Length: 481
Image 1 (cartoon, rainbow, N blue to C red):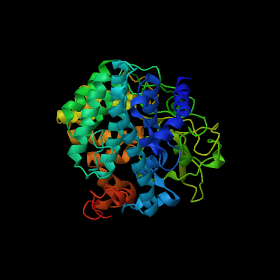
Image 2 (cartoon, rainbow, N blue to C red; image 1 turned 180 degrees about the vertical axis):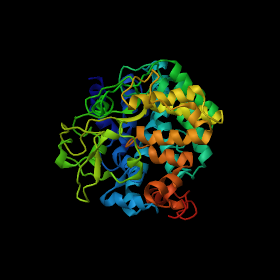
Image 3 (tube, rainbow, N blue to C red; image 1 turned 45 degrees about the horizontal axis):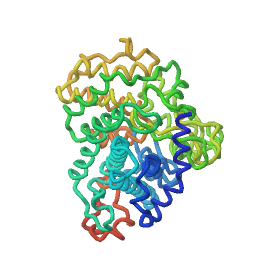
Image 4 (cartoon, one colour; image 1 turned 60 degrees about the vertical axis):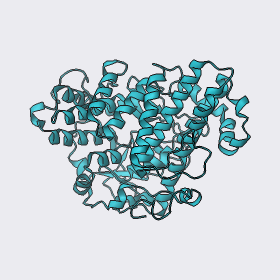
């Protein structure tokens, strides 16, 4: 119910979002950002581009990321991603939509950051919380931008009205991300009444992830450990593969595992597009059109074949002939038989859950110690036990043994393998393969493909270079485009 209420508040304020998007100069700032309701309306507008159920939203963005990973394939217009030779025009258009969504979200965050502090009828506490939420979401968008496009224009409340903005360096982008998250960590609440809004624990978790990305392993370990020791979260226990619906199902409001998610529902225009890409109409596992099965797997895939059949996560794959042979597999991780429209699934997008945090800690602690520690192995084993239907906090016969992974590289290989199993179809695998430097070897082993250098980054969109004269369409473009 709280999930629906939060979404309804955004629906009610859609007209506000349209004003923010289409007529920013018509807003009388001195009269609009005065009350808590007005500021909250502006904060809600930050989420809208990220939750867009059309081609510019998270569904297609995740689909492109998941279209070229080791454990699956893209079909139709996503198939070319499996060549690993860069994006074609169709997929360039798709990621350009994601770029626009991220920057629209950033722009709306900047409006809050700039104007909320001047409110006349809102408390300082409410201002501080709203600005912290805006900075968390701004950092979220920049974190996705910098990992897919490298250096990008940094637009903040200080230069948001300027059309031109140079392409900043990767370090400059990360400086803003860290500053925003540190402020969010300090000023976001311990818990929220509207499920789906970030807490300080979400900010700490994203900080740990950013530190891991930057190779700041001590900071990543310590920040993850801080959240773990707070005892605010716990893995959802499962006994069967179907029990994963308690985490990813359309009826889930929140879980003990959820740290930060983008919320979706059956309300018109408030659905999640991504399940449409992983389901087939014949299965009846998705209503509202049944899916276009743009993403699939195959039982001859080496990653799938080497996966232990006793792992309940492997059971999320099931055999279904999608017209390319009897060996094809589909995923039932995101299903919603009651979806009322195309791109109308109510499954949330889980960006950070407790499993992420445990694995961030495991990797960072092991890298820092040049080998796995007992605590690092225990963190990984908690996720692993759950995958086999075992109590996550109790030693089990399925546990990995410290002595078998004594070196940092051996443990990292294990962690990277477990990343793939645990976070399938969550939009994380390709980014992890790049971050860990394992992409070339893993893709070669799984698909026999050599990744072209241009494939590691996406092109700066034509829409950006066309109006932003501070970016040279040739000199500032990513290599190969």
